[in-house]
Length: 542
Ligand SMILES: Nc1ncnc2c1ncn2[C@@H]1O[C@H](COP(=O)(O)OP(=O)(O)OP(=O)(O)O)[C@@H](O)[C@H]1O
Ligand SMILES: [Zn+2]
Image (cartoon, rainbow, N blue to C red; front, side, top):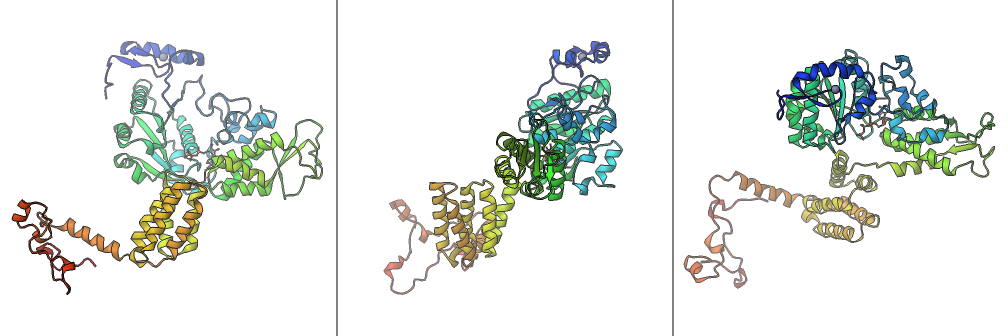
């Protein structure tokens, strides 16, 4: 596919200069040879919004996330292949431990979750369903053959991490890795990346792996932009999404990608991820929530010994709800807060200014500040409201209240819940207890007046009322039949019978409007009168 616009100009894949096609080969020779990172920085580098461009040329670091290692952060455990042997990649914990000497140094800079991002499958925890031995993905990885894929899973379960591991794996094939975030990239950014990929393929026969984070944020049109290029193999697409791709990803694109479903990390998986971080930070684990015996802790040097209770680790692993980023960052906050304030609490046995203890409560605080349990915009939001609706319908007041709590504590908009209750009051309770509708509308208005957190009890009351109320879908069903009847009607809709029409003018009267209408209050006996169009006479919706 020819580049539109300037057909005689081509962009050097190394330094990104635009050059006449005829000069590109000689330019490439020297550009590749130079291999000097400053040469790259000096020239105009491609910088798309939200995009990190990765260079393969020997001189630059291959991984954006792992490049520019701060002294001793774990990045150094992720060396670009040419600089270090494979053996060095094994133990990331050494990465944090070397270089940076003090704990505060190790916690400095990037979030702990980023520093701990594993760069090999050995350190990638869990997800055995898709990555275990003999799984398709594992086999493809071994063969260094990566199809276009969509990684679908909850936040912090390792989608981005897996994409990086796959990319790293593919580098053995010489592929280049580019990332875009759909939250900030525009269609033009996408075009730019694709153009670049075409050049790479044409000029240096190098494939491009394009990682698109939050791919569901691209609209269908933007997703379409990828389509032909995924199909013809110019780019291998790795998309990540927290949303169900069957709704959120263009079906044509979806059919060209394998969907890989990642799971929420288990508590055990979380514990091992946390342990790895704790180890690399040089924090010691206290077996029970007892105080240290301080034999090796009463070290003579000024660096304090930091301990974490086993209980604190397991609490953290439970509370972060399978989100490793939340877990690691919660740990980081807890440690940092303790370093700032927590020199041995008074009365602790063996307390000295040289010991710091991280306990369950510190971890809870740390997590509260870093973790949003609930995804207001996504899957969880719909799953929980559906669970609430069904629990109320099933008159299970306990379950109903639980789902309400899950949403409100997770930061759900109370009005969203209240609106659903209004609907429920009519759809599921209806005339079995018409007061339910008043309750729901009142709850909605009350929530509107007072907001969270005060309005939570209004919703709790209303939800309980709804769960306990008798149920009737009589009206709901009848109305559905009306809609059905209208939908199935063939030909023009029957006109409103004349006798039911109002006749405000003389003309209308003379046309027969209102003629023969029996005004009910004028009659002692029940009135015989047809209120439906003639052809629907006798139809029953109830
Ligand atoms: N399976 C895993 N094994 C080890 N560490 C993990 C795993 N999953 C996540 N982590 C840790 O959590 C951090 C965040 O993970 P990652 O960015 O891969 O999550 P994600 O699924 O892409 O989340 P989001 O949808 O929020 O972008 C990583 O930097 C890594 O430290
Ligand atoms: Zn160049």
